[in-house]
Length: 437
Image (cartoon, rainbow, N blue to C red; front, side, top):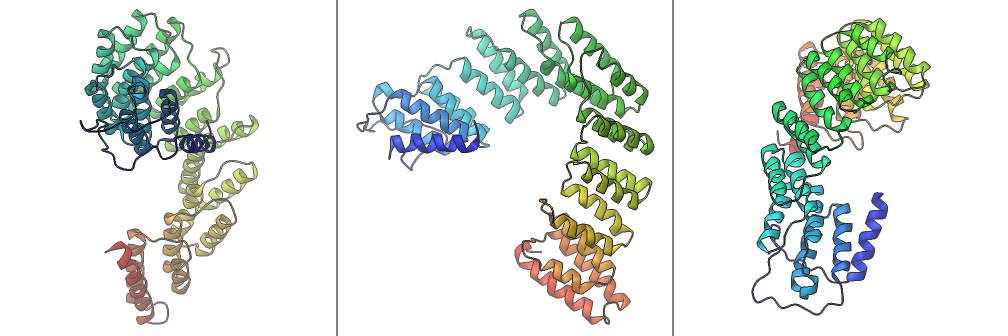
């Protein structure tokens, strides 16, 4: 559901329940005191659970906890159920409070509410994906199984991803074998984290075996799986194998996408094969695809380093004409190379071009420009940029100013020794208060 629709649903539910939500609450418990008196309420359990579901979608953990407390203060017919707790846990997890979500599960048990499969699955997800505790998540899986609540394929996939991220591949393979034993459908999503882990270890032989295992299990590798595989091949510099994988894509039932070619181009750039990277860029354009912003930025960086910064600028302009997605990092990359060559007018031109686009410059953009202007002796320009509305300087800005004004003062640039030094002191003093340097 879109954010606007979710917010509207929450507001509607809040209006219906009126002043139902008290301010005071304990963040880790919904247990009420022994002397609590239930105020009269005409609202049903269904009303409360609808509100909790809306708060879960909106990620409003505080409000969800208040609703739970209010439910316990209401009539016994409105006492929180497993579904109520699950929605509140989801709201807390979405609000970036996974530890509180796990604590709320304990609160549910303390209040005598039996968790259902959905509650266990959410707890497993919190441990595996939010708290990054695969061992705890695996304990939840065993707990579910012991209670006669078989984990779902999604639970297994969640845990496989968590084990892979922790580098525990043997546990991930064991879970995959369990899924086979349970006759659960094996999807590319279950294999992908394992494949990524073996490719990150540059174990292409294991990657080949895993892809063969997918096919023998009736699970056809998709574009995501092949993109991971291609990234692994690029990592070891086996570009002939990459070409072969792309060439055989139609026969193997998948179609290369923008990520495929972006991964390939980045790999070529990192290995110094700039000309071949441009050949692949031509293929991307011919297929009507777009490089990812990350791929384009890396291509521009290597072009400027290994060929010429002017070529990098031409590539940037051409990619913009083709409608490629260009972000602030793209501009920072090209500006930085011109800055290193002392081409301050070109840096200034790129900066003004950036301001004309729906791309907001970040502090790194300003730092590159200020550094370039200072090196060129344009201290008044640098001061003007520093004072620009909306620019919030950081410690890097301060270090740039200290260094550049000091060097300029030593060399007597900018109208004598005193002018650049005084300007530098003035600007750095402005920084000292907010940054506390």
